Amino acid sequence: MTPSPQSSGNAGLAKVGRSRSRWSLPVSLLVGAGLVAVSACNEQKAAAPVPLPPPEVSVVTVRPQPIPYVRDLPGRVAPMRIAEVRSRVSGLVVKRLFEQGSHVNEGDVLYKIDPAQYQVDLASAEATLANREAALVLANQQAERLETLLARNTASQAQYDTAFAAKKQAEAEVAGAKAARDRARLNLSWTDVRAPISGRIGRALLTEGTLIESGATGVLATIQQLDPIYVDITQSVGELNKLRRDIASGELSKLAADAANVHLIMDDGTLYGSAGRLLFSDVTADPSTGQVTLRVQFPNPHNELFPGMYVRARIKQGIDADAIAVPQQAIQRTGDGKPEVWVVKPDGKVMLQPVEVGPVVGGNWLIREGLENGERVVVEGFQKIVAGTEVKTVRWKTEASPEDGKPVDTDSHDTDGQEGQGAQGGHAQGNPGKEGAARSSAAPDSAAQPVAHYAD
Image (tube, rainbow, N blue to C red; front, side, top):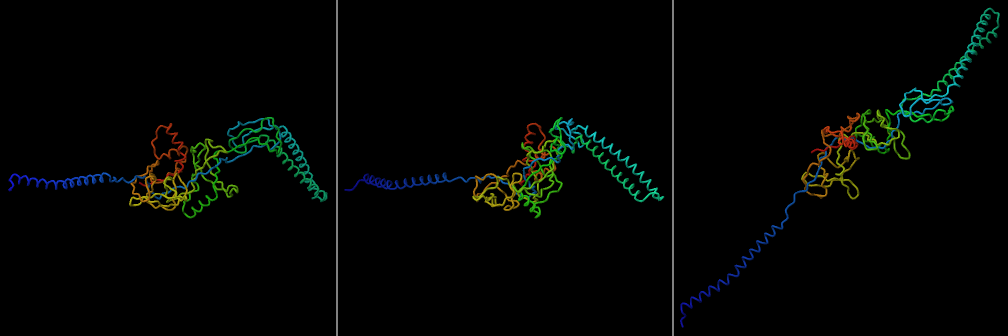
């Protein structure tokens, strides 16, 4: 039986349908796989980390500069001259002629002692002198008479010798009587107890009516010369010897002998108005402390310094002409306590570099070894870095405002009241009230201490 054309057409359509069904499944799988792949790529791109900018650190560029070698040392104020007022004669104190705590001049009468006894002694001495002078006149006449008789051979040589000896004895007695009179006159003058030196007198230790014995240890008052005045400061023998070795080797430059290179810090933290001059160092060390006394002289026109006061002296003992200094916070310590610093290398990466430090001067560590001119040292931002980190550097902002690239030296501001102005480095003159008081209280940390400046 021959199939009809319609049935043949339906069979063809059925074959085509089956063929499309076989290809439709792989195509859909390919499309789905492509979508999954694109989605995975997008997810990988979204999960990739964004690179962070390099951490920012503050740095200073070190440069050699002259920095004074400054030490803060303890000291005590001592009077330039001190004298105890004592009586040279015995007697009753009848009057006090000075005001306690006032200034007295050398030779001023301070006490009067009853002079009656010494007036009598002087009158007796003068009478004795007159008697001896009369005896001398008689002895001279006798000697002259016998000399004439001896020339005429009417007197013996023995008689003349006796008369001549009597004359010499009378002359000696007159001299003794004159000395006794002068002693009586001197004792009478000593009944006026006078000031042995000029200065400020303390309280009266004896009053009117007190009987004084000659040679006794009783002190009537004490006079002290307070302008100028001394400050005795102490420094260890080791430090002083090292300083001398550094000066001898040329590592430190010696200051001029007459330079005003010492400043005083009072017990309330303020800076004394005038600078002092180092006079000498003692030649003997204290065996119990191993320290040597240095004596400094200060002007004291307003009597602000009193004997016995405790002060701190900021003394400049030399100048390091090519010193390298870094802020104290730049120094890091290893586990065994050795100092090191973070240095930014030319490629912008940081590395730890060991250094050898000297003393702290003006809030900065002096670097003896380990840093070269122009190297950049990290001061802030340590928590952001590790060795090899690439960093972005910014200039460290200091409180000091450099004017000429040199440390502040206040020896040019040694007049009264100038230290506080010199410490401000050119600030405008404003209200002298609270702002001026703040500058005055900050003076010890800025005026007397040298300030290291750093290059941009």
